[in-house]
Image (tube, rainbow, N blue to C red; front, side):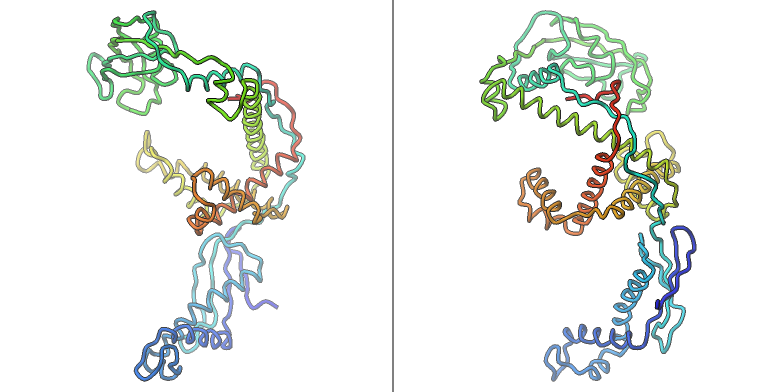
Length: 424
């Protein structure tokens, strides 16, 4: 027999009414007195040995009652939550609806709860996934990158090429007027197009040391600086010198220098394994995202407003340029769609994890702490202590990962030959 009543106010909001009996309050007052008397200091009595009657005369009986209410109300509320198998997502708003001699006897708690989710089939979902393929070219590219770490720069007098390192002066103007951040002297740059405004490196390629040239380009429309975004500019460039990377020989000595391998063949095999693991991980992430998108589309349920608002807060805190291109009134609302998608994903994964009885075991937690220990160079015990209450977030992350792995492992993956993930 329940001692509380439930009224559903909305799909994710309920009102719980529950009683506090005289016996429950009396027992709570006894516990409260024993807690308070430990710190009481009165003349003629040892610490912790003051009789209750004397204590109440000195400090007031309401002190004990107040402490008892603070203790018994959360206990009674938690009991009512268990009776109705609720899963609150926020703190309740409490209201006393009946009292006797200043003591609450019946209360109402209004609280947001997780929605009821009727799970549709989530195993055996057919999805297309990229093939996992690592070519010899991928291995060679990674090997060249390792060799480049041991390379030396040597001067060249030929025209500049992509991959060279140039020392330049430049001054940029828009409509003949210099702009902030558009000038530099003696700047050393690697001629790689992806590192600069499109067209800048292409204009330097082909120049020879001692040459000067005007490089014309147009800033992208989405360039971070609104002052120059979308505008044509001219850069006056002086090329002082060029250097190229001289790579060491690809041999056993290089393998020993850049890895724990003893031969070049062992290094190539090691790189192939690593690239395969990376490609496999990327492919599984793509498959997992596809599965989640499918499940989100197939499930429709209400979202607790407090969870959505909290997620919007987190998104705004994480955004370093939230207001770029927006008016002050727009940013918060512009995050609502992403926040709702994240909350819906979280609730759906939690429901699947509950259905599958997926938990974060002590072994899972120890393994994750060991990963963090290696990453930060600190003992696992210190990492655990530093996490404090955030250990719960770590456990949530473990459950989420295990649930996603279950969904991926049980999916029917059809290879998609047109979109292999990059191997490096």
